[in-house]
Image: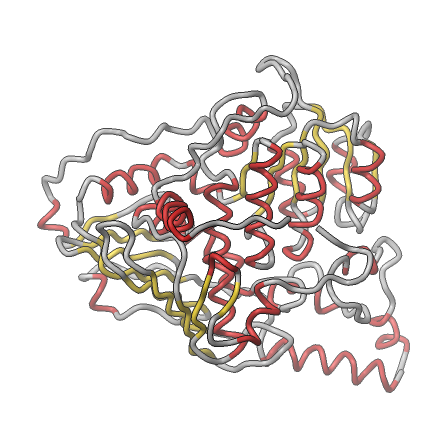
Length: 453
């Protein structure tokens, strides 16, 4: 898809992303009555994918896809009449006339290919966070969704909470003044990555190389229920290793996006929307170590954002792996393992936990008699219900791809600095770095033969 965007349009779009550019064209795909049931295919039926399918079980679940029948076993049992597939490409070809929508709950590297294939067929799409593995994929998700006018939603459930929307209203109404600085942190990773993961990986490989005994030989065997080639999908081909599954793939660059990609679409969500952030112009990082295989055990990433209309340029600091903002920024409040701080010129908003669903205004004594602003954002009927309503012609879900696409672009761009080891200056409009050509192969990655967007 070749589409040129002039600078003025780009800056306008970047600003709109921060003010909730979820106000999009209503879906024109299909002619489903609000009282009719959607026919939905679930792509990725185990783990979080199974949870998403269960959350839309009020509709007709007509097809299920998973590369591991054991991992997806509970979901397969729950929907015995749904047709089962291992390959989502085959499912979409076979079921194109039978489905209205898809949920995508696969590992990160499989988010964009099935979502875009389905949307090009005119199917509505709910995709788990992070929306995509790369920034380019996030851009394409938004463009295709708009072209096909389908209803979309990313699985960052905090977007649908009244607490997050109220926090946004407080900032928009000037409750903490002009936001000057933002800090966001997470208690992830809670899986092996960095040197720990590399050592485990090498230990397994060394044991297998020696073919010492039946126990180590068993490690090399791909489980009978798993199609390893399909699990790899667009990622580079490599031998099966039990270290990747079922969860630690998140820390390996070929498949996941580390602690940042896993959690920032949740924890950065409130400040991204409230401060009207748009696209960064540069990212820089310090971290525990760098290797081409996995994310580090900890990192601190600095995003630099330009002026947005009348709003000043600011920096956002991301922390993971146990790193935290300076204690004095919390003004005596207890520091939770995950959360965000928006520091304004009149006060600070502290949101503890992952999803931005609650907030505290600091210093406490200053805000003892604070009167909350009137609602300017609609309240949600529930995260998945927002999407289902949008599929049937209702208002767009708040985290549709016009909002969650730019959010995800920003999130995953932070990993560029972690991976290349230097400050990366960005021309996000054209999806490239202006000073670091080695980053461009990460912004837009190459797919393995047989897999495309």
